[in-house]
Length: 260
Picture 1 (cartoon, rainbow, N blue to C red):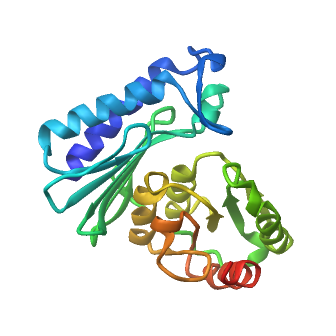
Picture 2: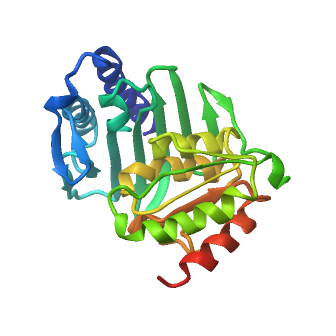
């Protein structure tokens, strides 16, 4: 099924690439406060769903624009046709297509495709993680002074901003630098590829992170919620890092967020 996921991601990616910097940001619809959708999001998702439904008509789907579609099989697809919509709207080329697949609740395949760099990140349960066909592993760095982290601001849930900023401050002073790209799927893929040592964010959607979670796990990284549990797909609160950096990051997030 990974073969079909790859092809679907490339179909969506071509639509994104062909329309990049050709849309009017003023025409984007506001789905909810500070959360937008463009006609390119919709065209990419339609093309992906049309392709996958022809081959797997009984599978369930959780997609960003069209919502949840229940199916009769054991499989569920998590589809983000354009992760990084705000970047895309503003001509900032940090965005991707993200497709994850779960069987009976367990993630078994993931694809993150960056159409501008033609970088295809793939993972299958128990078979490793790859970038354009070559194996990838998380970073071996254990020195916090050399650590590069990624994060995302909780723009959809500003009620948690103070807590988030506390976690940011505690981590920022310990590491070399922190980056905020605007695409959680790419952040996770970059952790898997060893470009970042760790990543944390709050209030994400399952289609944002499903593929990236498996990428990190198959590349030797650790994934949890902010308390060290496994509720990340349900809560959207995620912490991931290489095995050396993860304990220190978890210590901070547990201290800041606790049971809140």
